[in-house]
Image (cartoon, rainbow, N blue to C red; front, side, top):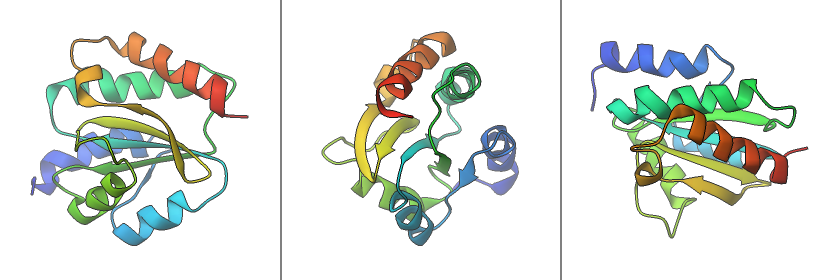
Length: 138
């Protein structure tokens, strides 16, 4: 488990921008049971999370008219039980962090794995997400 003093600033990059942190399995289940679209970011301490995943997610949300109804996040290596619960909803995809999932009415409709984040710019990730928002969000 990562130390709180390392995780909190990275978590706040999303929570300070409207994302709800899901820290328990119950919070994950309640969030995914909501109607509408839910962008769920599995946050991480890795460099690709700081350099492209979080900035790309924030860029996407800030630069589109169609936005997910719910913005949520859970932190790998910190919100351990919550991330395990999220990963049950991501099957058949293998565990990946960071990762970005878009759910609609509780069903996974778009997923970006770590290997699709590494080596890509924040702008590329934002464009990918904006295209998914255009397709699935109101």
